[in-house]
Length: 295
Image (tube, rainbow, N blue to C red; front, side):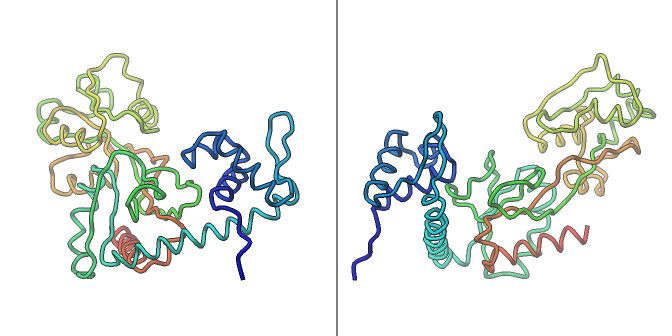
């Protein structure tokens, strides 16, 4: 018996437009023009003989029929997506591609990776530090360690490492320029990484110190570079617990003050919800959580 299924492009256009309630956003998602989405939706409505949308003052609303049709289509597309993902997973079941920022990889993840490899010798890890957050629908990435608040739609986000923020510097720097109180920072070069919620003014305020009206600063676009500059004695950086723990333990950096502030964000293990049951994802996630719990 022949299936009574309209063309897939029509269904994809309707599903995206219904999900966003916007032809423009549906077109952006599908990589086509708004006119193409509109034409596909109209063709689908004509084929079904039922209006799926109401247009009121240039806004889009689902009709009762559209609301009833959407869940079935979403389920069908989810099943196709899961089937495709499972097919690729079967082809590369011995590989796991992980994205993490360079600073986190260097200071926290890489020193521990040999323990994972010893426990899972049949699973090959590919680690990348590409500069932007992963789009799991487009990028060939299985799992990401992402810094943020943990609220990312349609993604599982498992808290991994919380952080405290505090100044760090080379032991040699305090020999040349003692740092007894936060006010002594006025004579130092501050190493800054813009983009974080926590900055030097926030730490100084928490420490009960006045803001520095005039100071020398060097700004970096990556924490790893700023921290290496601190190790080399260039200046004082704001350290974040998971990024400086190793250097503090090794004596390459010291924390001259006791005052710390709690970071507004944390590092999370992030992956698509549909991938949560994949053995390789679960194995790496569980290992990461064990490592974090061990300190």
